[in-house]
Image 1 (cartoon, rainbow, N blue to C red):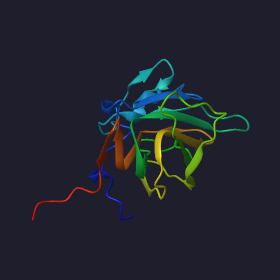
Image 2 (image 1 turned 120 degrees about the vertical axis):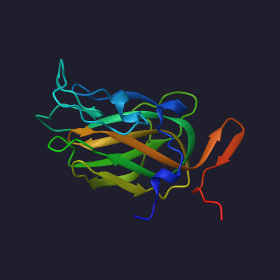
Image 3 (image 1 turned 180 degrees about the vertical axis):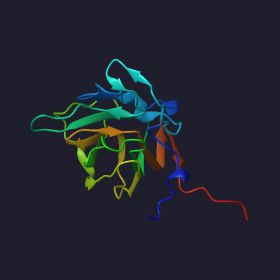
Image 4 (image 1 turned 180 degrees about the horizontal axis):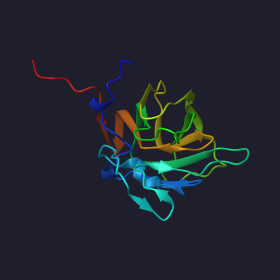
Length: 180
């Protein structure tokens, strides 16, 4: 993959104001952990009321049809260059696959009845890995929805941006270059 994710601004950074608005299930690990700018960590012998503490979002096993998803309001509206679905430390409990939908909804948080656009078709995931994908769309988005099939855990969710919009200001966020 030629995309150097670390050379872009992360629109899903909680320090930029990104917020995990809703998850269908976050029983084992809270959805807000997806947005931390810090690298995920493993903590031996740390447990909470729901089991082993994990640094990321983790849902319960599905016993029937369906899948889980998490809606994130991006810190800034922008055109998305790529995404990193990071399953670090999720080895037996990662989702086998995931897809991503996005929407532009600057005035209100979107609902499931609104028309979301798929920006990343379902892709296979493996445990304890970064899954980096380029996004081809040039559209501006305010919210993203991570769909995991059928369930599992994701450590971090990083959205890199080509251009961010802040009110009337537009920032070009192309790759950083080193001085000659």
